[in-house]
Picture 1 (cartoon, rainbow, N blue to C red):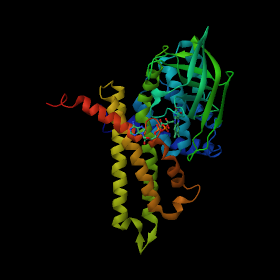
Picture 2: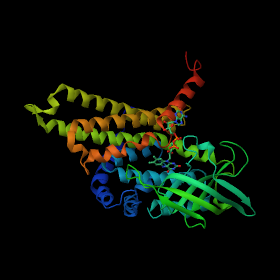
Picture 3: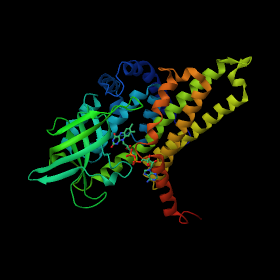
Picture 4: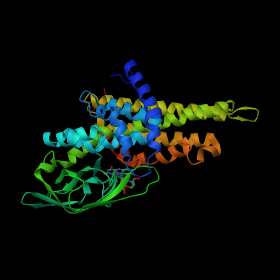
Length: 378
Ligand SMILES: Cc1cc2nc3c(=O)[nH]c(=O)nc-3n(C[C@H](O)[C@H](O)[C@H](O)COP(=O)(O)OP(=O)(O)OC[C@H]3O[C@@H](n4cnc5c(N)ncnc54)[C@H](O)[C@@H]3O)c2cc1C
């Protein structure tokens, strides 16, 4: 398992991605409007072949992590746009019908169709199995009624993977996944303004018709579809965090090496250099946890849930620490609108909440630990 180092081809690919992010994607991202889907940015991700790579059959969780980490280093908006195409489309890739894949995949890969993953509701976030979006049966299918909230890319997405309750069964049973084109009658939405430039919104379903052809996977098997997608994406949220932490660290190394105070550069103050050493060590530890979790996923290892949860938890918490420390070591300039760290300070907060808050990850880790307690010891 290549946990401790990447091979030369992977290292070169990451360098290429960082250059693309900085030189080709950042200028397009800067023309976008905060909180809105940036379609030219998606088109650029398509033209550069990055969306195709996201869905490559020979790709995997490690590739996804390297993509996200490297893009996040140079352009968080491009990283987010790419990841959201993946999150919204993976249910179809993993469990959809051939017709669904043929309808949406080429458009997504070209950066023409915008995808969304609609699981969360006002009353069902961490406890996603408590979702109540109602799928009322009718002759040829169902009608969806209810609300979704905090849905990335909503309401601008062209299609949504929607999780609704088709059965009487409580909790995760009785949930079905549907692919819903955005122009279905009865579907409306509004944008929500967030701390970060993330495009996100609320959706209202007023008897939206769906048929058997729209079911992703099996009726009643929707929760598994959602969890399979999130299992793949969880380590890669950690990778996004590592990319942001590395960008903050590198900016801090440059700044503290050149900023003069008290007769020398800041780095000559031990309080400063030890802080950067701590930032670098934690960032590297987070990276290794992310790569290890991704490799475990690709190898089909039994301990994927624990490793993925550890990677997501540690990397997102570390990125928060590193970005905050970077702001501190930059002083006032870091808080000026438009500064890289002002941007990262806003971007770094949400990943500790979405795709399983840090507390939820700790719950997963603890559950796995106690389930195996005693069994794995010699
Ligand atoms: C930027 C952003 C993008 C998002 N994009 C999407 C998307 O595309 N699709 C989608 O479906 N959802 C999306 N979400 C929603 C996200 O998944 C939820 O916000 C998340 O699941 C938490 O749910 P909640 O906000 O309702 O918080 P709650 O579930 O109300 O939890 C609040 C807090 O309570 C604590 N808590 C909750 N459960 C536990 C527990 N078991 N143990 C200990 N403490 C706990 C945690 O501190 C948690 O942060 C997004 C959210 C954000 C911020």
